[in-house]
Length: 150
Image 1 (cartoon, rainbow, N blue to C red):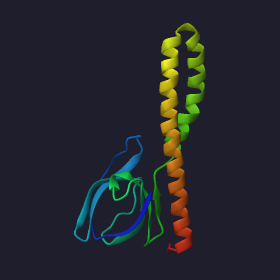
Image 2 (spheres, rainbow, N blue to C red):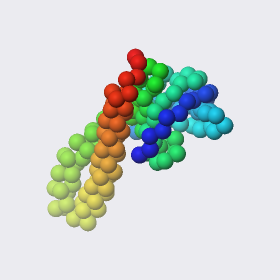
Image 3 (tube, one colour):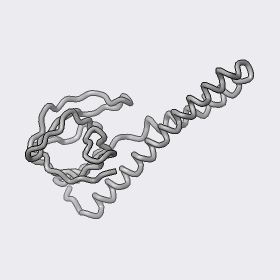
Image 4 (cartoon, one colour):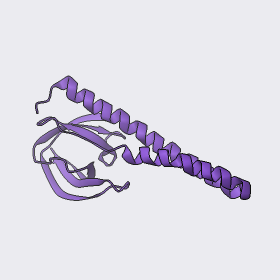
């Protein structure tokens, strides 16, 4: 995870939509100095304006397509993706897994294949949940330790 502080000199192409997990988000592009970033997805409806400075967390270094969230230096707003989808998926996988265990008695090959597929998706979802938890904690610590004004 990379933390980067940047001033968005110009924010443009702002639209709303849904993320891959059907979460409401805002798509935007920005220019900072001579560099431009395009088609970035930010959760919810953050306050975007020209000249704003943020400390952002990127899952992959220098890749704004992997934005996890940010703290706005001007107003202390914390923007971070929700963990709700992942928590819901993992909790729903328990009864589904139990039903697949029962199904394994009738059709072992299909049941076991489905259990492996479910386990793989639970692993991915749990990994994403942990990543977002770390990001949320880091953003809150950043806010608390740097005394941004609200």
